[in-house]
Length: 327
Length: 266
Image (cartoon, rainbow over all chains, first blue to last red; front, side, top):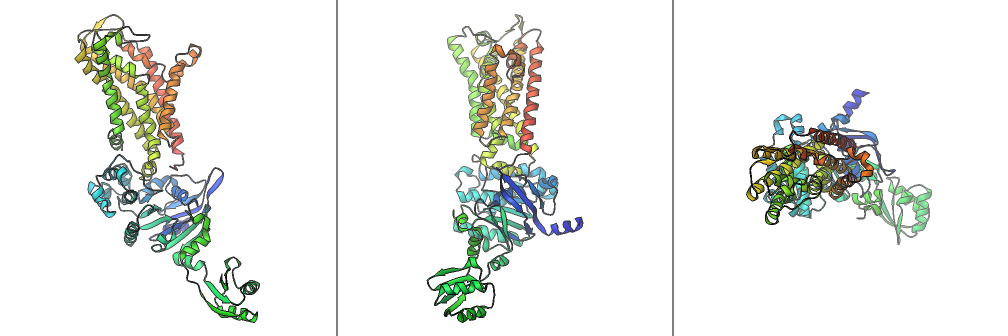
């Protein structure tokens, strides 16, 4: 049993079991079991306030869970958590730097304080020269602004400096909480390219967002949180599929059509949506001809029928609720 | 890590301004006394009226006038900033995931604040000595017990007194650090620390509560004056060292108990 669970945890960069945390008597995170496959780009989705950040803080050892276990890069023991942190880089809830230091001096400070832990991990790469600070700044396009005080940075530059700090050393895992907040579209594209490049070097990337579209393009896996609970976890493809296909029907009598679909349990009741003479629904069967036959037999004329074009965004909004998505 | 903490502290403009103001204080005082004379002081070991006789007493006059408010203010600004300041900047979470152990962070913050205290006290003493030599006579130093001693010995005693004052401020450092782990607002932690010190000073003037005087962190603060007796009376100084040591251990235990189990949500 132990050998088996060790084996299984090795395939995951992050694995949590029934992670639970209450603040003020309310479960902010409720029995969340994440499985982040090694080598994946894992999109951690959910509206603001859904418990994403608290989950991330527990993974990083900033917040102590009330219940549950966390396995980080195959190591479960909380006493070894700090050592494991040397193997990952993270951006949590926006950048945090000293406003009175330059971008370069900020990174230098973090390189200095991380040095002892880094030396335990790998003495060879621990001694990070100022070249490495410059290299990290160059990766995010801040080399020209390195001597500017942090307080003079734009929001986008601050965000990029945080990503640079996470890349000071070669990492196995990157944990990024809303990394594109405050970036312009050009910046978002650059971060996306950077992450895709890092993944191709074998890095696992865990990225949280409340905006699905920015995750949809690059993520191999997604998880969706709402009100502290994990609603979905799986491959991006499975997530698209989990919605089921939405069909639309143009009929002579949408009301009767609805009654028939419900009586024969051909459609998911909550998915039925009627606009004028057009009814759309998530069908419980793939055999659309049977649905059409049933409607015609029931006296409903079917003018046209087809699949609705669907984006992941709709699936996401349906899953998490519109109110939560609004910002 | 200590080097990084120290450079962070001393490269900050706020720290430099604070230090500069404190170092100027003996010059201001020296200049005023040089112009208008020492006059008669109030109660307690008042060195102001002795300043015109010897440069060494400018050091003592400066530190004893900075002692009740400005030294505790400067120290609590730095000590209370140690955790709360990082929390308010959002750097605390990045320090912890760098990773730096929480205990190691606390120890380094404590060490940094202690070095700051020594820097301030010795800095003011040296600054006061230079100002004293410029404004006032040098020569044999009259002790509080009536004898005289050489100027060189007087200087040594004054520097020793400044170190004793630094030690007397250790309780402020500890309290500042402890309070700093309870809030993400550095100003709140500074005011809280300063409030406790001022309360302690008020209580030490109320004879009805004489029974708790030995427990107050500020109770033996003026014991450094005993250095200027011959023979030196160590009873007050010893009690000060013990009291400061106990306050530091208590405050650091409180700080680590709090910080090591704290959910960092800043």
